[in-house]
Length: 254
Image (cartoon, rainbow, N blue to C red):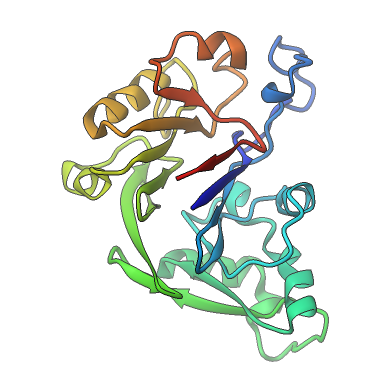
């Protein structure tokens, strides 16, 4: 399994518009973060988790030629805004793009992108999407089992996902012990770590480290990081030897 970090930033990305902090002004490419998303390649599938507003840029940067589907964590704009940009995959391969999301998220997508899902329009240039409603129960995509992990983003339920020995969690600040049981045994854990100070809807760096300590993966990578977390190279020095700050374009093999 190959994992590529498409984006590792928050809803504003880094640099933040009009910000002159040291992170936003940094010349280190690892401090430049697009909106959070990840690419998962198995022998059966090429899957993306979330299609944010930088989806087009991310697909071009990584030279992605096709995808088998998109898994959605939740309906916030920084995770869904790029759905329309799947069109070239539809046209090139003459197919529908499979999307997988909770009923609530599908409802939001159908409202946001009404022209895609409303048969009355049937415009020939729109993306062709096949919506799959999922619940907090494991399901199959072309032979790969996908296990949702439910947590809270303040009061909003959000799905993380486990595929084989890889687990991806973003935009959460609470996961129950029952849901964490699904994560145990994971070799590689990716989890959000927004900043060092308390936040209403995201794990802080310390809270993310606590989750890592509970799960004890071989390696852990932090994502969905704000410019307020600090410089990539400096924060990296503060982490345990098996924990890393992810960065855009990072590739790992499992």
